[in-house]
Structures are given as structure tokens and as C-alpha cells.
Length: 475
Ligand code: URA
Image 1 (cartoon, helix red, strand yellow):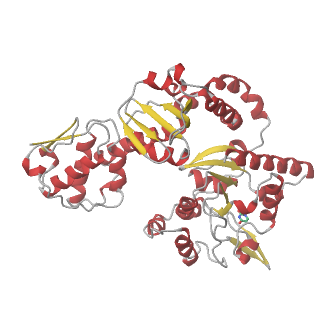
Image 2 (image 1 turned 180 degrees about the horizontal axis):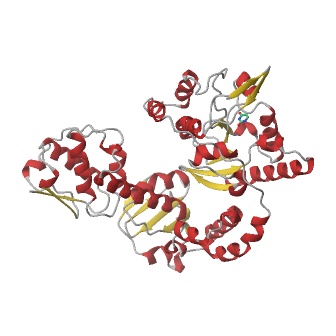
Image 3 (image 1 turned 30 degrees about the vertical axis):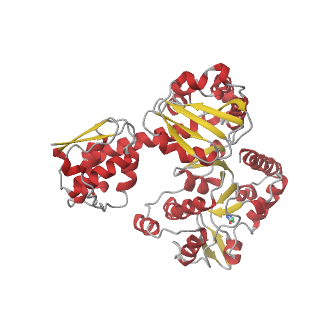
């Protein structure tokens, strides 16, 4: 029996080294005892050798390992070693066997860690500390306290560095700490709550104030469900979140505000996702937006007929990306997004909202025009959910290159593509977390064009402009 001791927390490097050595020595999972407690130790000479053989695993296994090592379950390393052993011994597609007890358990661990990461991204709040003397770290500094369930502190670090790159901040948790000085990220030991929240160290709560105003302005009364709210934002996080003070009053006023809302846009018909096509796209691994655009241009439309693929347009690094449904007749001919009637309405609304169209990145969930020919006219057809899914990988990869601070979905198709679920636009309009992006949902300009009465159209257009202003303020 071999005993392997890894570091406390998520010791990904230690696990990887151990697995390489175990694999080189053909050591089966039944012969290994895993434990934690620094530093990494490989128990005996056979495993302590430097003879690390590379281990070639199917693509999906690596990300699963990276997530599951963050789980607090003491059996996580043993489970992962069993997975690697089975994959390397003839079960290469093991992860597709969702009913397999090992796969099922690992999927649950993976999901729990992802959820924990999502909560830390969403619910961590910084507070301002007293300014320090001038120097590289001089000026305002911020501190946050958070209690994650799992060992995710290092996993969330890139997110906070990217979001708050120009601030000096410290994140303290019972599982470890992070410090960012605008140039370097440092990891530190676990902390205790009073370090972060001692009142004499918190100079003022301007940050908290800001959050409170943001939360009130983004609050969507139609989504009030106190039970779900508590499940999504468990009470243990409330003490560190200034906006929770505003919740009772907002919940009380919700029903009246919901009354004022209109009904949902039609649901999108569902169709099976063409898995093979999506997998083939994912294998292409473009290295830049230009690379990706070349792939999109070379691709066949899912539904034949389109003149060309219509690519996104606007600066990489734009603060806001606007995502529409699909190119229309005019866009299909010109090869540019939002140049037809809906695009012109969008441009006018942006102007009214004081937003420069040129500063935005504009794109579509689906890159080809889908239509039926009626005489000389080409009549727009909504894409099916399957078609939206087919194009989703492109859209997400595209956004990954553009890296906007906020992604605005125009209409139900864009919201479906970005959130992965059917969205009722009129009921859920407003800020919404998309898959890894700060998002915002509003109506599609073509909905405004279709509204019959002048009065209704004017009101809806004013609401659309207000949404655009709100999105710009958020971004
Ligand atoms: N509608 C869209 O959703 N996108 C366009 O580019 C044009 C119209």
C-alpha cells in the first residue's frame, strides 16, 4: 500500500505529480491511500522518483480534475485517481457514462464547486480601508471577507484580478487569502472573520453604498421568490452584503411593480442539438478573433440560403457587446450586422441614450439569415433552439476574444444563447448573469417595429432607450 499526502486545500500540482508517478509505476487505485496535510509526500521510493511520465487523457478529464480537487470531500483525490485509472485502462469515454456511480459522484462534486465559485463571484463585496501613505500601494485599498464551502480561493483569483485590476485589494477567507497590489497576486494563509470586518479598519462604506444603489436599480420585481432568493443567496452571505438591507422593502413592493409588466415573448421551439457539429467546432481552437471569423466565414449555414455569414463588428475590448438574434435580409446582403430596419432603430435608440454605436461590439447569436422565400420577398424565420445551440460555441468564443464588461441580449433568442435557457424577455428584462458574463436582457428592436399602436410603440421605445442607458451605466 502506498500513502500519498497532498497539501491542504486544492493541491492540483501535487495530485498531477502523484498521478504521473502512480501511472508510471502502474499502481492501481486499490493500492493507494490518499491524505492531506502539507507538504506533498509520495510515501515511498518507488513513487518519490522523478520519473514523471506524461499522462494523456481525453480533453474533458483535465477540467473536471481541476474543479474537483477544489472540493472539500476528503475522498476527492481517490475518486479522481479511480477515474484516471479507468480512462487509461480502456474506458476513454467513461465521462459520457453519466449513470456510472463514479462519474455521477464526480459530476456532483464538480457541480458543487462550480456553484461555490459562482457564489463567490456574485456575492463577495469589498469595503474601503483607510488610505495608506503614498507609494506603490498608496491610495485606497479594499478588503472583503467571504466563506466559501470549498477550496476555491485560487480558482476565483483570475476573476477578481480582471474585474478589479486597478484597485489594491485583499480577500480573506477561512480557506486562504489573496492580495492584489495592482501588479502581483499573492496567496496567503486562512484568515479569521474579525480581520476583515473590525470597524476601526473600515474607513467608510462607500463601496457598500454603491452596491446598495446598484442592487436596488437592478432589482427585478417579477423575479421575486423569497424561497429561491434564500437558496440562491444563502443567509450566511448576507452579513457581508450591504444590499441585503434593502431586500425586505423591495420584496414588499414587488407585487405592485409586477402588475405594470407586460407578457412574455413567444417561447422558442426546441429541437435536438447537433452535438457532433458543436464538438467539431470546439476542436478548431481559434487563437484570435480574426481566426474565429475565418472559421465562421468558411462554415456552411445550418439552414441553406444565406448569402454569407455576418460577423460581429466593433472594437475588441469594447465595454459593451450587444447580441441580436440573426442577420436580417439587409444584413445578409451587406454582410454587416444591424444595418436594416431593426438596426436603424437600434442606432437611433443608442443615439438617444447617448451611446456611441462605434464604441460597441455588435453581433448576433446566429450568424446566418434564415428565411422562407415568398415571391420576391425573403421572410425572416426565427432560429430553433437547436440552431441557437449550434452557433452558441461561436458566440461564446467570440465574446471571449472581445472581453466586454457587459453583454446585452436583444430579445429571446440572444438571451437563450447567452443564458442557455429560455428567457421571458418582458418578465425578466434587466441585469442577468450569463454564462461567465455580466449580462443585461432587453427587447429586440424588431419587437418595437411590430407593435401596432403608436402610443404603445412610443412607450416601448422609451423603455428600450431607458434599458440601454441603464446597461451603459452598469458597464
Ligand atoms: N436583427 C438582428 O438580430 N441582428 C441584425 O444584425 C439585424 C437584425
